[in-house]
Length: 312
Ligand code: XMP
Image 1 (cartoon, protein in one colour):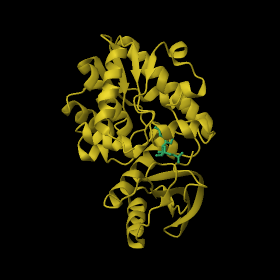
Image 2 (tube, protein in one colour):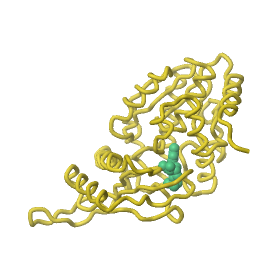
Image 3 (cartoon, protein in one colour):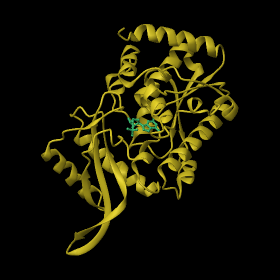
Image 4 (spheres, helix red, strand yellow):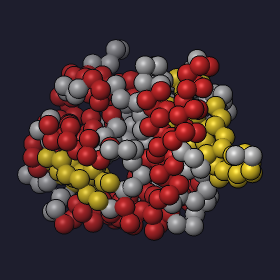
């Protein structure tokens, strides 16, 4: 049977309203389509008692915290921005193993958010986990930050909240349809996917403010350079290896940036976007000119599988 976003919205809003009653709920959003749609459902169910929180954890893209919170407020949501960079960089300091980094992010994310939610007097916690997140985490591909109960983490015991996940049965294309029906602006429901742990998934090796700044700048250049292409995601990755370059006739040992752009429907499989060569050269030139620490720019040709979309 074809997916009907209207009856989905009606059902989920009813369920949220019944469950939450007169209490307050806390909805975390990264501005991505999943968490924004789930926050919208919460808002539709309980209005201003749904507090929509955006954490500026230092791992977001340029201008993203202010931009997202401004848009959410513009849509009438009770949205707030919390500046919490320090605990994230502290937790990630010295870590290089991908799964250790993911788990450190997850722990800090929930400790920080639930700390704020308690101060705000919320009893429920609403998040935008979707089916693909659960499948990948349960399947052992990687620990997605927002999959908890499904892998045996008892959220009520661990965090003292009831976690509600209105989108957990859906895949990305259905979530986009729900977003459209809810009246989200097209640039939000069609937005390219961006993971909750943000740029930390795109820095191989240690995640430091300085290394995140490099990947943030390169990401902006790649996003701008591919904005007219139909990529599911297009972004930069900073490798942990370095390479020898040459500047003014002298050796320069510098950083390596990978351009990753993929076409996909639901993130379960993906293939590299066919970016025209000239465009790749323009992107490369901008990265080299604007990020002098970089000496090599690579383009990743690998589909998923065997690769995954992100690098950790
Ligand atoms: P992979 O790298 O497994 O990614 O092919 C599949 C999709 O999931 C996103 N992703 C995440 N999203 N929290 C998220 O919210 C996470 O921990 C996470 N890990 C991967 C990734 O960007 C891609 O869209």
